[in-house]
Length: 173
Image 1 (cartoon, one colour):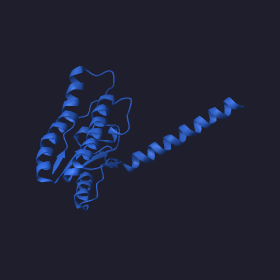
Image 2: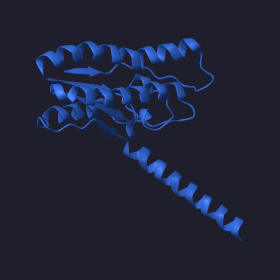
Image 3: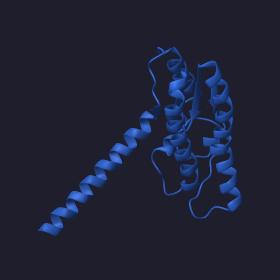
Image 4: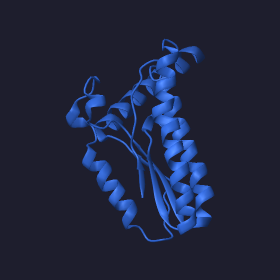
């Protein structure tokens, strides 16, 4: 089994140095692709194996302040999907785990309570779940969000929807 877990966070979309962009893509995307590529060759020969790439919810939903990080994680999620399709005929499984914020050193500075975040143990349990599945079960992607974050975003969506409906009402009236 290969668990691609290396990653760094980079804040910024347009206000990011070329060096930071290259470093983020090298670590978050190219490193995972290169490891997977070499391990996949061996797994093809043995007709068995599992590659799990730790992507991110930021590889599914973009943010104005995380454009470079989003790009690296969208890339990893897409690569995982393509690799899963390529490797399926060889008995090799590939899954991208896309967690929301996980309480690690990388997220200590975020304006989000650590106790509301996912924990490393949640990722470990998710991997255990994947490894316990039968030979024909293949979740190619697992989205693993933080409950308090979803609640906060849902409340924000309700406010946006209400504001939008109010604008429609005013413009039609």
